[in-house]
Length: 403
Image (tube, rainbow, N blue to C red):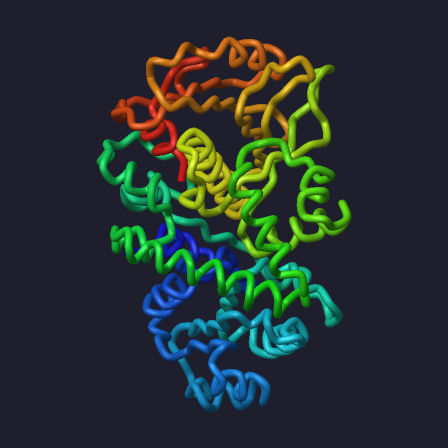
């Protein structure tokens, strides 16, 4: 399956001199995407993985040895692409990359991938400021399953979609391998191994956190409470650690793409909540409660769109939620260049009454659109962003116009 980033990243690599830093969750498809890009640039062999002992030894020898080993010490008609996978695990990766790039930026394109946020590793070394652009790879989504995307447009044209594929995406999640396999037993084994590797290898080795069992308990609590306000003091009491430790561990889990936090919007709303974020999971399939899973499913699609628009330079987009002290709330709001753009309320059924808070918050914030999204509804091949009053719309219709 060719990922949605292949075409835009090809164009961005060709048009810009900067290193491409590509990050995302473990097993989201970064290596597959990198190899697809290598084929586009006819540079199939130019791949080095820090986790490979032989590749690691070569990287430690420096750029000249790498160029000789890969046969790059000759003239090329087009600039080859050179890929470094999981390079951030090398303590001196920034110095290495800066030196390599400064010396050979006119001869090679550079792509660096990592399963943790590449800005997590800021310990020492010269800054890469001005030398890179950062892009984030998300799990599969409703729109990505429909085919190629137009990266020049904010919104995609409405297209029909297989409801069975939507249900599969909701239940199994958007990580490519289990989604393509569509086998429950395979998914169970894959999920167990992925969680063990994330906690026992990636996080422990990178952060030196020793209380892995307590961190596992935090992961379990976050899975059960997905989409609810995150009360640091309550989590701290449950796990028997300090509030500062909970904050630090949440930062780590966010950095490794296990979860993400959405903060409340309060501009022009005097009684709005201001502090407590809501925490969602990158892998919504972990959530047992169907209502929470549906909400997280929509949240992840919205976050993917926000990241896509920001990474491609369309503007400054942010994802928030809305809630007042007297209990009025709407699940999500997307802002564009600091102005409210559209509201989203998630319901499982089309028969659910239109939430009156959509109209109330639309008036207070000035948001252009307000949608009440319901799951498992047929696609209406019409532009839902042409309507400015609060309306009901199926998840396939709205999310199919995003990314």
